[in-house]
Image 1 (tube, helix red, strand yellow):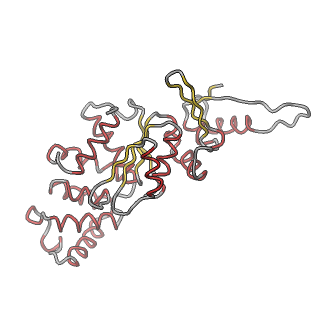
Image 2 (cartoon, helix red, strand yellow):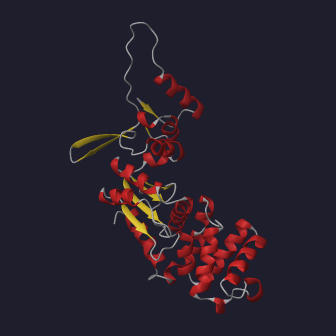
Image 3 (cartoon, helix red, strand yellow):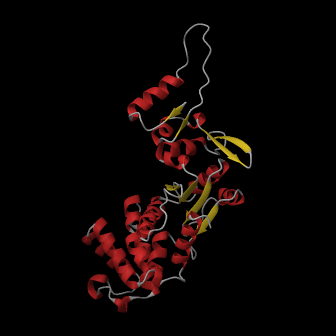
Length: 295
């Protein structure tokens, strides 16, 4: 049986519930049903115990249970519900959080404007790993199921080291920003100054000018720097200290901790990448693209 996109979601749900309902006829055997699907709706409606990843490689077929391979059953079920599309591709980018997921999705949009293959064409999807401790567990679980995995992590707080080591040992590609930085801090450190100003403009678009200016002024003043209100943020303000202050504010105030906001970051990053090829930011983004393309 193949369950596809043809049915409306509520009909899919009813069909799956019917198929899983135990038969009550006396003497009737319980049917064994094998179904394949390309529908995220079907994945979302099932439990982890219902789903198996079947792969054929080099003449050998393997079957892995989504439930049995998970260290934490709740993690498996949460991702079936929240990101069912991850189970329908070959390669998964696991972002530490929503910012990293949005960043990867936005880069996909940017790369398509350069006529590079889309994530969809390369059978790639970016998902939210659920935080520094959970993301390595998700990466490990996906590797156990046979998916290629790229794990993108902050380095401002140490992740789950045991799970991270297991994920690496099982073949996950792991990229952490250097210098104990969050993604937001890495952007503020590495982008050209005009890119920094563009990031602040994005933050104002998302959070309002009064709020953004107030928290920037407070942080700059606390660091012994002239405020943005008093001295503006022209090119003469470009320094590592100011960049670090602004990056920390962006992280602490969650300016970009949202998938849509993370996606918008690519409109600033993309046009500036050629100007900063030696920075950790650019090298990390090149690593993502190389992995997407099979490098």
